[in-house]
Image (cartoon, rainbow, N blue to C red; front, side):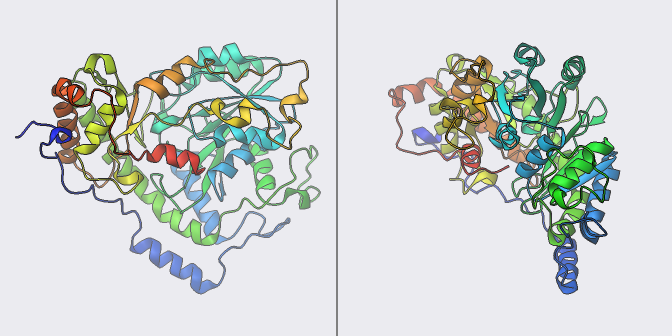
Length: 457
């Protein structure tokens, strides 16, 4: 094999694009055809009665998800962004309440608090799980803290036990954002409803999908009722369902259609096989990459499963001898130009820490008078750079993501990824000498960053 890196004129490791994911099949098509022929594309009505909870397929999809993973309630929504808003409302967030959030996630995992006047407060993440660090959470708790949004990032799971201990001690609600971790279990318990309420994304890029959509889950009857009210114009159903505490039940249309639910029913049948494939590929790749200097590919699976929405890697530029950006460009040169998220072999960083966003820097969210940041006039909220050093180090220096550890790829595909890493690392000095200013004219597409900027969740 010619080991000269492609960035220096050698042959690419791979000439052909990675095969696309094909998740839809004949069962989805057949079921959708039945819905179309029925003329009932959505059966919800915005008031109490038979169709308050939706139609035949919505109920079937929700029941199947709940039964499959042992949740008492599964409540479909038309996006997981809206699912987060529904969850925040259901647990009772009010103006001035503080919600502890992760800074290293999709923006909606924090902005959901704004919709009820809540104020995001950012705790740092654990460098091994990429999820909220319980110690940092504890440092951020005040008498105003009413909820924690725990994001199970990249397909892994947060260390839930110490988080739950803190929540119980301080009477704080826990919302699990498991958008990227469907079917994942933490110490034998399915994520999503280990806390009070949580859920999953059914966006196009996720393991299984309905185009757009989401699924809330909870084991709490009261939270389930409140979530259903917020999902479907709850102000019309207060008296019929005997709701005494009417705060936050003014609803909206956050409803899934019968068409989407019909697709979801059969998508759910495929989830476990997808998770098995990804785990097998990921563990093989991790074993190989861990033999290379400057690469830490150990995966956080001590406390639970991993769905490998993205395969996370830590990069040591000093040990390798290449800046992260130049390393990324050298790896990309070993493969065909990607056509989007599904074909990108490597990404640099993830999203910028959320508090870098102008919403937090200027503290302008709802209206232009500073609401909700001004609801606690004696409190100064700090969103300055440096408040979450682990997150900032990962973003600026050490994090690499591999989105192509997925079906229908094979062990051979993973070996090609390893060979590209190996080739670039073994030729780091020659690459550095050839590009002393770290300046290539190639613009590398970062789909994860693009997804965040286009508000995909």
